[in-house]
Amino acid sequence: MSRDFDWPEFLFVLGAVRWTVLLSLIAFVGGGIGGLILAIMRTSSIRALRWISAAYIGLIQSTPLLMQLFLVFYGLAVISGVRIDPWPAVTLAFTMYAAAFLGEIWRGAIQAIPRQQWEAAAALPLAPAAQLMHVILPQAFRIAIPPTVGFLVQLIKGTSIASIIGFVELTRAGQLMVNVTFQPMIVYPVVAALYFALCWPMSMLALRLERRIDAALGIRRHT
Amino acid sequence: MSYVFQFGIVWDHLPRLLAGAWLTLRLSFGAFAIGLALALVLAYARTAGPKPLRAAIAAYVEVIRNTPFLVQLFIIYFSLPEIGLRFDAVTAALIGMSLNFSGYATEILRAGIESVPRSQIEAGYCLGLPRVSIYRHVIAWPALRAVYPALASQFVLLMLGSSIVAAISVEELTGIINTLQSTTFRAFEFYFVATGMYLAMALGARLLLDAVYWTLFVRGRPVERAWAR
Image (cartoon, rainbow over all chains, first blue to last red; front, side, top):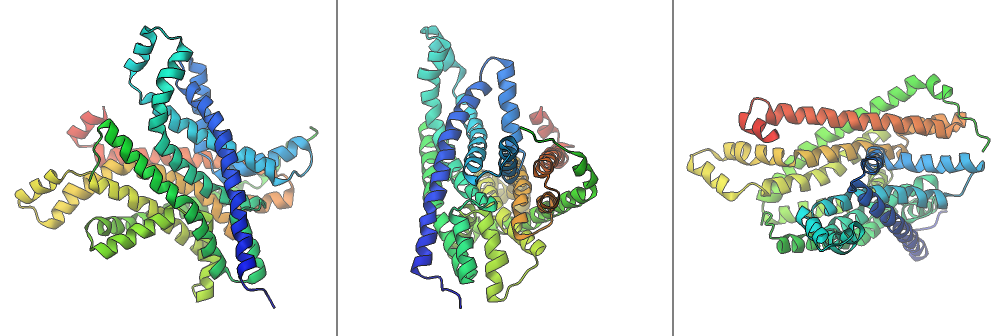
């Protein structure tokens, strides 16, 4: 006799949302730091830095996230010589993944700032680092917000893959409840609905922010 | 660190890896074709259909785009059999990939259709073109050209994302690797080589898609050729 998918089971799945959110946040913060460095490297005047950053971003964006996760998981096991628990592997893999995507988004934002802004800052005269810090990045930041929120949605959905190496987050919690209740027709749609509740408001926010910035910049997209 | 890398064992299993990669390619191109065909219909209905239909398609697109592909697969492969819809793993993967791609492609195509200026459509009417011709020559073709780069990127994402179907026991490249690494205990080497194979497929797909763009939209069209330069 198996259990039904009832309140305790639902609360178990609901509780796992916090691991999905926590993993996404860690990856977002770590990836944000890495992404900022990558974006600055990618737009610097030193060719080697540009090249390294472009190669890293291209490599991450042209290979499956699942492969990156496995490589980090088994790579860490090779280095340490023992089977490691999923936490460090998962956080490291998702941070590396987020850094590449955020780096690419923010590169676009930095390059969207007209050349004249650099020249005006240089004429003031600000040092190159100050030009970046006080003139370019604050403007680029505004342009970058909508696609950054959009990527956060992609990241939250992506963390579901961590379940494949046994990391207990929302999707894995759903699998565990299917194993005890044998009611996948109820459990998986509930899991999907929880992801939707997390992601959809952010997608809507990204869309609204994008429209507002388009309006501010005088870009008219279709009505 | 006392681990000794042994890539020879990966080489021994090369035929199976290639068979897996072949299934990855078939699934990806199959889902691309089915998903794109579905999206063309959905995008048209989304922009020109009656209001309830437009709302239903918008909801479909939002659900697909705001839930993880892995969970969508689980619903198709594990949940649907409860209501009598049973698929083998490869079919479930193909359905999941097609539906997932159609959600993103519908949104991309809608943006393309809405980017066609009204005045162009009115110009079409003024020339006395029939509705079908206007849809084909004035709306669909230019819209497809406008969003082609976005569709191409989405295809690469589809192919890379297909590695996830290994989770429902499909023996594509990732599935084969999962099996081989668990019997040989050479996980890192196998995943390393598989990652390289995915990289090659992604770069190859990009080249192919660029060539298709050139053939469809640039070659033999002097105005576009001038633009491309």
